[in-house]
Length: 209
Image 1: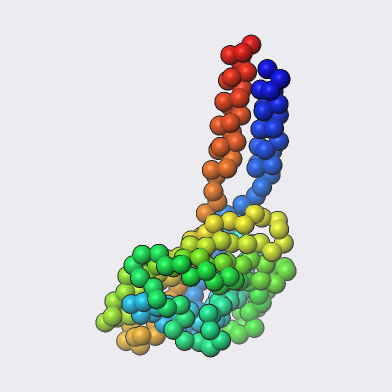
Image 2: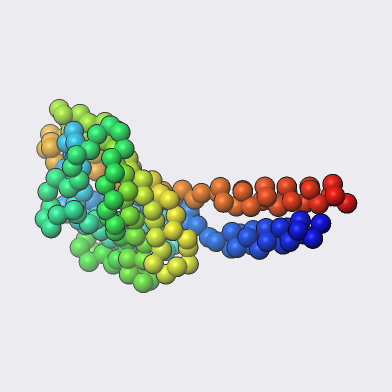
């Protein structure tokens, strides 16, 4: 009985810790800066322009990441080019820390949107990238990735996230306009396991009574 009560106590502490852990939720969507509306997509590579603009934010990002603020992209190399190469229709491990970081004040288009406080509060570490589809004639393409969103203030836990990039294609193939979406995907598994453990411990303690 004493051991069971100890287990319940430990489970309660774990549950409280898990409950207090806040994960990021919601999405940030955007596109390349209107002054430079080009990226590059091929059958095995994807390149985004270094400077992009946020169009909308939901969940944890709403009111924090302002519309028209700047979302930046880090390249594996030092200059704008084909970007990430060697992609296929199955997830490819890329492991690029700070692939995207947001946001900062827009000083390009005159929208006047301020960035987050602190600047570039959120970072996205890209871990895998998949070339889902590519049309060599129009340049239209779809890429999806997975990674981790980080709040550098520590107010939110590091959160798994999905990246979607859609190239619209057009006559300027292989350079084409694109949109992107970052979606936080919290993992409820830890809390669920703690709750299940608590319920199991309580059930066993009742039977022993």
